[in-house]
Length: 507
Image 1: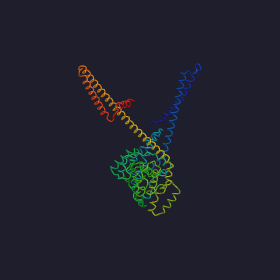
Image 2: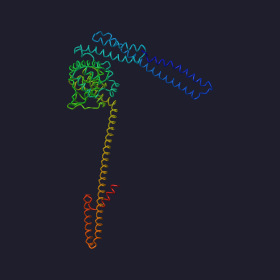
Image 3: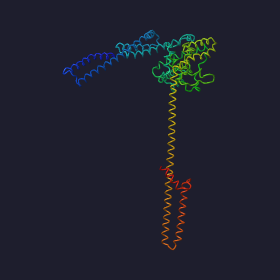
């Protein structure tokens, strides 16, 4: 195995050679006439650029190499104690896992021996996961052997629980990614887990979960977390019964059809899971309604809990408040409902704890509200209001766009109707003109025929002219009646109205 440090050192060795080459070029350029021409200057510039680029690359690579070396050494030191625990374990049931860790250690040492700290760090991170999994499995085995009374007396909290309720943690909670949130696939898997897993079904469902939330966690990691979840359920039930906390409510999906697997529920699970050292999906099932405002499924009395946006300051407070209260009530861990450490609310809490147990259980969840909500309004209020304002602007723009589109469509319809009307009137006008021209031509022909006939029959001229005028009159009257029928409501003054129509159409 070779290390990138060898490449870096080889590059460093080239720098003096390049500088010698640069000096030689400069000296040669001045040797003839003491003037550096354009071609010579181009060669000098090329060498200078190569030196600068190489130096920058070396600096960058050395910085990265040094950072990897520091991170590796820190993590390896951290793992030393846990690796000692693995080595000391002689349970044959974990022999295969122990050998896998031994192989992983050898691979880490191999990379570190040639100073390939990028590879060494990557392998140590995988080693850490294997060690954590091994120790959790061993601890689960031990915990499963305890009686209920013994289980009630020990701590099942993660060693880093104190970090969970810090301001840094809570600020990160607002935007933390939660894989699978809001998907029907995750909702279905959570429901399967809630019913209980065993045998082949356990492996199958946890494989589904691993595909949704990604690897890591692996199926083996999730299996260890599920085993710890079952132990936590035993402790929860025992401590809850002793403290008269009542039963854990399942989610009422008639009231909250989209809550299971939602961001609100998973945020609660994230806080609880980080405090207890299990995946957020399992942690949500320790108290499925955690993240809803109010106790259980209800806000108060018969009023169902409202569905707030996950970035709402009240919702963020409710998530942390529920998790902190649950930890204290069912596992004797964490800061309790007064998670912000308000001195005033601490005094109120102390007073409430002197009340009968049933009263305490009813009133205690109302503590920590003022300091908690106040904190989140300060931390997330501006972002929440800005986000809602931006959403309002987008909605307004969409509404205006829709209105503009609707108005445009209506205008198009009106214009189209006008064009159709104009075309219809134009067609009618053309038809009327054609009818009148035909009638006039027919009348003129009739008159011509009468004139011809009068010339041929001079003796009957008077009678012929009289008959001709009567026929012309009848023809004109008939034509006007036809025209009146065609224009319908035009009534009298047909000619004037036809001219007006023509002006409208063509102007």
